[in-house]
Length: 554
Ligand code: PEP
Ligand code: MG
Image: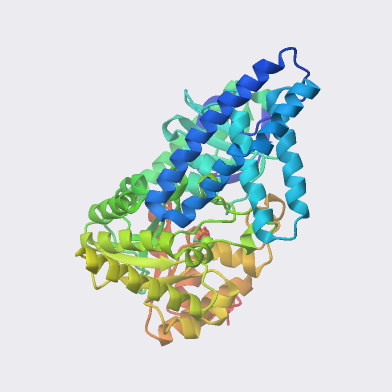
């Protein structure tokens, strides 16, 4: 038996076969070929397939986002139809007698080097199109169709690391557990695993190798241990442990229908975080008071192209209907950093967490943003909707958002489509800038929701994706607690409520501090709701000042 330790992400004990997740990277090697004409034919056929795919992408983008955004695919078509590009590939195949995939890769490399020397951001950004074309052609030449990892049986999925789109692409019903070499507790892949209720362990390190592929293992998501080829004694011990945990969960279930109230009668709301419609069952099952954070970007991550207004409307409407009038806070598109999507064509950045992400992307592309806003507005008549804007750093941004909401409303008026006039607008407080401006921002919006995951990374200068610092990081940093306190004071002064929707909200060792600060609502993964309720019901806040002092807040 081999025992590997990592970070526990989501509890649960499960036994099964290990299957390694492979990224969709393709390896191109240089080979001399006997029949260059055969390689030319392969290249020509790959070009036809690639052109067809690009046409589909063009049509889909045109329909959803308009001509300007679809233009990127016209450029790709032009490159593929370019006679010089064509000649360059064929020249390598014919005169050097090399394989078609290598010829494509080499031609693209030469073009990229040329573009890199031109002093124009626009031209340089075309390198991404070249890379896209290159990948597409090579995929067809090598017949690597269906680049999605397919899981055809139940398994413990192991990987180097997973980005959110990869996690979303996994067939949930076949994933017994997720175990990764790298990855931190606050990464989006980890958050997704929690929302999906999949036992998960990250940061196992180099001990997790592909040699274990096909071997039987037990993943213990409670303490983050992976046992490869476990002995009988271990299997028995772990099954007993799981039985005990199940009993604890059973006890917690008795708290369903009870209030989230402290011994001194302070009541607080507990809401749920979701990433899509399929999570609503678990929200209802765990008796959440509402949905405090619907990460809408996962609708985009699930799709191969932009979800159009109807698709989005359908999803928001169903979530609102299923929540039967309980509050539902939908966060607008929060893409970028680790959440990137191929079809979005986001630029490669050195520091994506500090780059083109979230509301910045939305304000840069008002047509795309308004598609989401119209879908949300239309859905608002089916329930109790609030809209939450992520990554705000300035008042001007929120004013721009409001202007776009007004435009979206006028567009619906023209179409004679209804929307509610009671939609609340809130912002995420997840940058130190938003904390420092919280007195002014509170005058602009109806509520605040503190995103501790990002607030922590930007305040403590600690990349949330980096597993090396994850374990050394003081998650209960006093600076963070003081910031939360400051936000709360400023919000309450303007009469608006404050919630916490980051992962720290589920950390029961801080619940007392959050309640003493005066947080109005905590939104956590559905599986954490009852444990949090249980904790709240044991607390006594009659000496708030002492509690604040105890945590170094005042
Ligand atoms: C946060 O940053 O705390 C948050 C809730 O948003 P996300 O984890 O999706 O960035
Ligand atoms: Mg965030």
